[in-house]
Image (tube, rainbow, N blue to C red; front, top):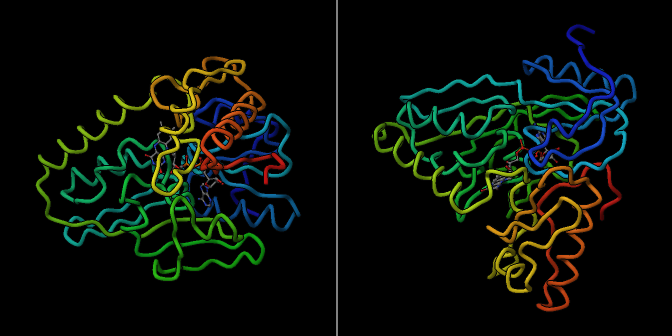
Amino acid sequence: MKNINFEKKIKLSNYTTIKVGGFAEYFSKPNTSSEFINLIKWSNLNNQQCRVIGAGSNVLINNVLLKGLTICTKKMRSIKIESHSGIVVADSGVMLPTMSNMLAKNGLQGGEWTVGIPGTVGGALYMNAGSGKLSLAKNLLSVQVIDTKTLEISEIEKKDINFQYRSSPFQQNNLLIISAKLLFEPQGNIKQLLKTTKENLKRKTETQPYDLPSFGSVFKNPTNTYAGKLIEEVGLKGFKIGDAEISTMHGNFIVNNSSANSKDILDLITVIQQKVLQKKGIFLQPEVRMIGFDYP
Ligand SMILES: Cc1cc2nc3c(=O)[nH]c(=O)nc-3n(C[C@H](O)[C@H](O)[C@H](O)COP(=O)(O)OP(=O)(O)OC[C@H]3O[C@@H](n4cnc5c(N)ncnc54)[C@H](O)[C@@H]3O)c2cc1C
């Protein structure tokens, strides 16, 4: 098979924003969607497990050897922007901050809020990433996917995808996202869009701990309240296990002060869940995806 290029025993902590993770038995960073597809075909034909990460900004990877192939999409950066129609076709590995700035420069409105999310288009659709009432799924027209079992490539329209709060069908099915077709509002005021984008980034970095490794919000917000507020109210801000610490700036962030490992972080997650359940009667559901654990 053409274009099969992978490395062996690669340290995944270098590919996650929290700087934690074990090793990938096989690891590859395809440059194009056709290389991506070929890698998935290779793992299917060779009976190897296959998993995909984007920017690794919402994953906790266990400190173990992950069998099979791990694909990182971050080098799949092709993006086509039609300024007049507002249609954007982006590879799954396109970074949201890059896309956000490109949209503003092309006068396209609706992506200014994504500038502070250090993830990829594929990861954002899988997670249904968002902010307040906004989500990337709102701008979605369709996704191109590959089925890891049948290797069938198809285009799914947004109306056939049941996105819910930080949840998408991709979290349950065998489909991997190759690219996405999105629609933004054309003919916006470029100067104003660039200003809003810059202000949004400033606001994010002033209210969340961007200076330390993290994976963003650890827990989903329960109905009618905020996970960060509950964690603060039970007095856990600043609580540490090893080098993993509940951020003093934002209760729903765990930061890695230097050499935290996956066990420190999982233990911290458990402590938070137990204390919030005990004191507030609410079970906090992790938003972050666990890879390589027997996590329920
Ligand atoms: C400082 C900081 C701020 C953040 N702020 C926000 C925020 O405001 N709102 C928000 O919603 N999130 C936020 N996040 C979380 C995170 O950035 C988003 O969830 C992001 O969309 C994840 O994208 P990723 O490429 O990093 O995905 P990864 O973390 O690499 O992967 C997440 C999941 O998606 C799957 N996946 C990735 N790519 C594909 C693909 N191509 N096909 C199928 N599955 C795939 C992975 O297998 C994994 O299960 C923040 C994170 C950080 C560190």
